[in-house]
Structures are given as structure tokens and as C-alpha cells.
Image (cartoon, rainbow, N blue to C red; front, side, top):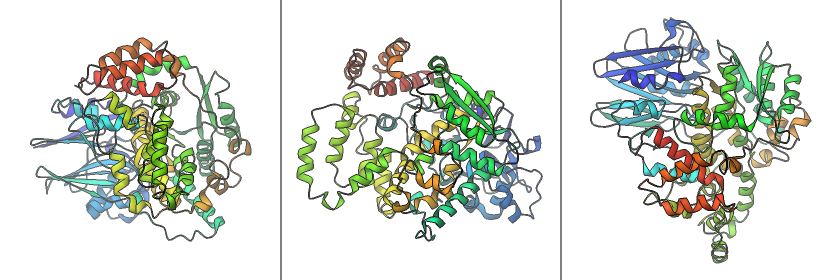
Length: 602
């Protein structure tokens, strides 16, 4: 069984595999060699005493500093894996509070017959598990667990509800009934067939004692934290580079990398044949400014269309996004790189999305929100007759009991509204999504933060963790590329969340980030109009992908939880040019059905 599970994840670790099997315990590992490439650093790895056995996915960026604290340990390797063992031997479960990085790891205690599993604070690396009366199984991917042939291939309808709302599935469920997700910032102890989960880090409780009254000092400290975050992520014994789109976030990361490195930075850009969408000229400006070793590949929409089947086949969990991440990661890996830094996360931290400003506007009504209930109810009735997404969102906002982030964020992030889901599906509606429940449970803590930071926290608990980071991990690791995200450094995040809105509110796109970096970024990068390549899905689904979509939608309509008339009616209206039916709403169904079929899920 253990060999089947690890073989299913060979793409995550093509360089080595290993096993520890003793009695009722079996640990398997696939290695992507990045730090200490010697065979002695392969896993599973035991500590010096032989009591603890480790399997580990990810990186501990501050392992050298921790190693100095544990200098009496008899190290045999030069990497971070053995430092985890040394730290666990010394501090037990509290060792996770010492680690800065992206990780999931498990340690088996031979003496106490106890399994310890931990996941990083931001949820960069995934961890799925299954437990019944006989087995406790865990892995970095859902498909690997299914290879055990112990878990029934049954869909989790609670997860379907979440997926229809947000295009991904959030903690605690997965798309498969019985397979759960370990929450970010948590560790789990498994002993005698029972599990205990503890939270060691909470993004809603990250207070700072920094004096934010002096804007210049705030910016100076922010730059130091940005430099620190990038430097931490440059540790590697294999070729390392960076995604460079030519936008503010990726350009900032490349500029900071250039400052920290004595050698030219390897940068990689995807350009497009359609000049109105192509941003490669901005990437060229940054590459020249920082004298990077730059590679630019020009692709056409047809290139993406050709890669679509491969991207879908490599999805470990269904997602409405992620295809572009797969294509870009594949090109970078083909260029010879194993590790790449990404600017993902800058929008979430520095108020880069339109919703940040919308939330500020909505909160201006806070004092009169309850007293305006009658007016809002009338407004909700006025917009109820139109089925457009925008009007459906307005209706939900007008009907909200409060103007809190818990009420507004789920509405702005939803793909399908509750009314749409009710029309399309049978018996999957829940009173609240898992994201909503989390926001309501944490609302009191979230309210202590500045308004813009409340949106950042909601983004982290919602889209960022369950779509953005999950897609980045699954699509990059599908081609054996490790992606590191400096904007998700927890020291940086904790600090930025406490910065007052008066300093953070952008006067131009992400002005706090830009001004904290001084003259690092050229004006033509900072003040240019954001473009971005928009795949012509709307056209493809009516032409090149029509047969593909039609087959999947017809099969999807055979599912017991689906109302076929509603789905096929929307599909026909879409094909006939009805602008009220968005391609994304139907693409969610297509992607889900493809994944369920590929994994033989009922």
C-alpha cells in the first residue's frame, strides 16, 4: 500500500524515494533534492538516538539559525530535515513555533508510539488525512490517498457546496468523503487510534508592539522585513530563479533578490503573441535594470489550449483556476530551474484588489446600517428579479444583518450565488460555507484590526489559502518545481496586518509597498496600466472546447446531487449568446466532472 501511495506522488519528488516500515507503521517519502543533495539526507530520516523518524515536505528557511541553538546535536547532514529532528528532540511539539518556512512534516515516536504531524502557518504546503477504526492515512495529495484502495471513492457534498461558491474546497473537508484537511497553523497528535489537533498560530491574533505613528519608520521596517523574507528564500543547492511578469509584485521580488545575490538572478517571463495582452516589455525593463539572466518565451492561446488536458490531469483537487500556473511552471522547469520565487500574495497584503476599497466604502454606513434595514429590504426586492451576478450580490449585501467582513467577503468572492446553487444542485445547501463559519467565529478578533487588514485576513482564510496557494503548489509540484512566496512570510504578514489604514490605503496601486522600496522600482512599472492575459474561454467553450464541455456537462447531469434541467438550460443559453450566463459558472461544472471521472469518484 505505502508504495502505491508514494508512487502516485512521484512528480513531487523524482530524485529519491524511501520507506520506514515497522510493525503497524509505514512511512513513505518522495524527495525533490534542494538542500544537501547527498543520499545521506534522503528520507525517512531518524534522529541520532533512533527514536524519532521524519518525513518532510517543504523548506525550513531559518534552519541554520535553529541549528546554532542546538549545536550539541550530532549532525550528519547539512540540510534542514535533520534540524527538524533535533528541534523536536529538544522542544517537542513547540518546535513548530521556532520554524519559519513552508512545510508539512510527520514524526513517528518509536518509544511512545505517537505520530506528530504539523503544517506551516500560512498553509503553503497541503496535508490530507483519513481515519477509520483500522487506519490512519495521510499524504500531500488526495489522489495518493485514493491509491490505498481503503477509502471509498465517494464525493463529499459539503465540499461541493463550498466548491460551487468559491471554486475550491476549504478546511476541514476535501472533495472526497472521509478525507480531511489539516488546518494551516496546526499540528496533530495521533495515538492509540485517536487524534488531537492544536492550533499554534492564528492570523487573527497577531498583534504588534511597533510604533506606527511615524510613516517613514514604518516604511523602513517594512523594507527590512521584505529583504529578510527574500533572503530567507534564497537558500538552495540547486538552480534558483524567479517568475517575472513585469508587475509591481514580481518586480519587487526580483529587485530584492538582486540586492541580496552576488550573481545575476535567473528570471523567467511568459510573453504572448497578442500585443494588447503582452507584458513582456515591462519584464524586460526590470531584467535590464537588475542585470538578470533573463528568459522570455512567447506563447499563443493555442499553446495553452494544447496544454489544457495535461493541466487537468495534474490537478490533485478540482479548481476553477490554475491552468496558467501549470503552463508557466512547466516552462520554467524546462529551462533548468528547480526553485522559483513568486510575487504571489502582494495584492492580498497591500490592498491590491478592488474589494479593499469597496469594503471601506461600505463600512462608512456602519452607524446607520441597522436603522436602514427597511430601505435595504426594499432595495433587495428591487434587484431580485434580475439573475445577473452583480445584482445577486447586491441583493445579498442589502439583506446583510451587519456590515462586517464576515457578511461581505463571502459575497464578493463567490462564483455561484446561493440562489444559483439551489437551482443547480439537490440537497447540498448548507446554512453557511466553511469560510463563512470561520469568519463569523473569528469576527470579534478580526474587528480589532484596521479595515484594510480585515479584508487581508478574510482573503487569507478564503481565496488565498484554498485557491491561490493550493493551485500554486499543486500545479508547480506537478512538474517538480518548488515555488517560494516571500509575501507569505509570517513575520512580514503579522507586521503589515497591524499597519493603520491611513498609511496602507493606496494613493496609487500598492503605494505603501512601492514607497517602502524607495527607488527600487522604475516609474514605468509602478504607474503603468495593469494588463494581464485573458484566456478566451468564452470563445473556446463555444468552439474548440464545445464537444469537451458538452460531454462533461451531460455526464455531470447524471450525478444524484445535480438538477439536470437547470445545468443544460444554462449551457444552451450560453451557447446562444446569453450574456447573463458567465463561462466561469459552467467551467466549474466541467472541471469538477472531469476530475470526478478521472478519479472514478461516484
